[in-house]
Length: 209
Image (cartoon, rainbow, N blue to C red; front, side, top):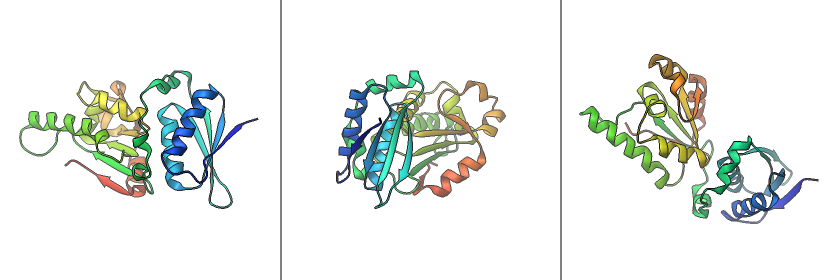
């Protein structure tokens, strides 16, 4: 029988803390979490995905959400050992609507010297996780895809963001144009439909350009 963690009536980040405890105590067992608000649902899902667990959500009568957590692929579960910061899962950091989306459309930031712009872009991406809330997604297209497929100071930062549940999408057409599709190192290959849908559903879109 599936264990149910009842987090109704709790405010963020308590549902995430309860979920973390259940995950650590239950090993690889599938379990459910009940929450009664959108912020808690989003934060529990984001936390679970950051630890490599898969989630499904059912809306119940009375406005509650039943979140089922199932173990993801075996290698993903090593993420459970990473540091946990409850402050990353407060109500203020939960994305509204489609969440915050960052758009990176070039491998340099600003106009002028390209070498300077390249360095600025690395720093920009490294700083994303320091400025709450975390984005729901980061979209890369045009020469921006070089940041997910080549050697750059942004790769470690992007891997950490991915491990915290941020979805990273890279334009497949752009990767083909720069002959980088086989070299992608973080995120997943996407298309214009997914990119446009992410922008349309976002509560806010931010771009460094």
